[in-house]
Length: 307
Image 1 (cartoon, rainbow, N blue to C red):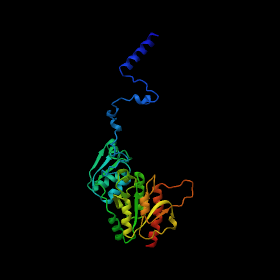
Image 2: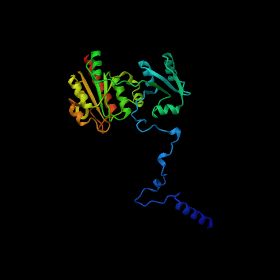
Image 3: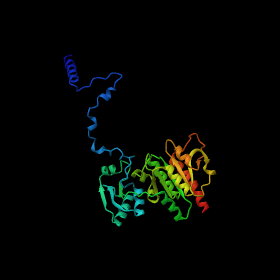
Image 4: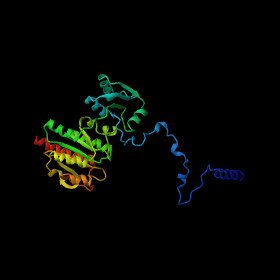
């Protein structure tokens, strides 16, 4: 009983001097929250868990010239784009990395071994597979440049526009689909959408190195510019004409909408028409990158059939 009394006295003394916070009323903050130190925002994170500052994380808008992942680095080396250096994780000299290192050495590109923590930070904690190339940032082109590529190939333009695609995995997958289907370029907005981050580069599996990409202030204005150039514009939206009943054989541009809201109303009204993929199951829509693959494959089939 005496020891219990001392324990209770000690707790009362601690509460009096503020080292043990009092319980909050039911209408106040939860007790667990009141236990946080008043200065918790200034506490330092563990070094091995430190994350980049806001805006520079895994989904951040940093375009630092880092090309991550073995496939993306391989395509970068094939493109002969200027590369400052190749960062390889210490101990990772197996498999395809050996080939990448040999190609870099052949081109006179410095190969530097780095700790995994450094590669994680550069990649924004996206999977980098032990290799990162530091290259000059991809240069954006203009809408007119994309139309010029179609003229050089002597093909009717096939262009993809992304109206507010925010997920970098989706944007990378769309870039990959567009390049595989022979599209002449892709157009993305400057704001409220994913940019060309290292994660997008990796998700594209290197296709970003072979596809012209324009960044515009306004997707609706880009649609108007394409229409003036004689390009027929299609908004990919539920309720539109079936893509299998749509003529894609001429100059065409396909607008893919955001993951949550689809193509915006303004862009939809600006486009010439809407196109949709028939749905036979119970789920009412495809993922945006999957829908892009289906529509682009059909458009590419009609394009090449007419050539």
